[in-house]
Length: 266
Image (cartoon, rainbow, N blue to C red; front, side, top):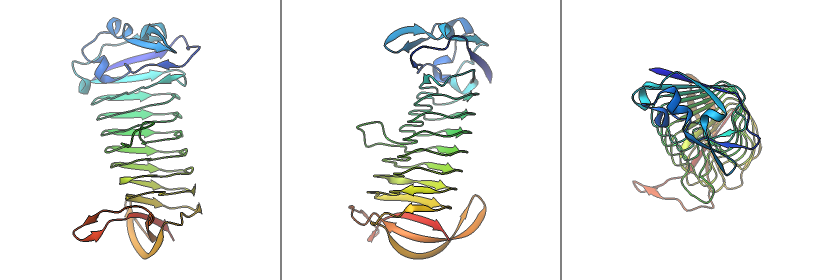
């Protein structure tokens, strides 16, 4: 695997839309060609090389390409946009849409990331070593198709609306999570190792929420369904089981009604 390192040299005054910072866009290019890839500062077209020093050549394919982003990228959007293979490592913070529409490969963000990370993610692996903003793994605004595949690990906390319209895949949050988890979800799983505020599973049709900490306010549309023992990350624990959202339509599978599942550690 060939490594391309891009280092911030000119912090943009406005936010930088850099959809081309992905192994797919870099593949087959040398450093000079990568520096000429298009970006937008606000609505003004520019090139990647105006803002980043580029060193190293990409591999022949996305799978053969690793990108390391150095410096302060907290005003840079869309890193890892639609990537299908390869690897991206962001060594500092980044703005919105990290890993948006991601289909494969691995993306590691060592700092905090902004809202809409992994929007409509279909595959691959996203690791956020800091905190995630709002709408992690959610649908794009106005769409009903959220995350449908892949895995997300957040080592810190996550904001509101995690997994909105989620269809599949897995999200694990080692810290706390804000309101509206898996709203409108029809599949997938969100595991929260810390606490959550309220409105977990609102209008949820299918899918799974597992929470180890406290829930400030339980949704009234979820009803108790006994206790179960689950194994999570190799450790077994007992959980109170709730099903819902009872106010929503629910499909049948083999004659049985399918509900969303919420498990709260006892």
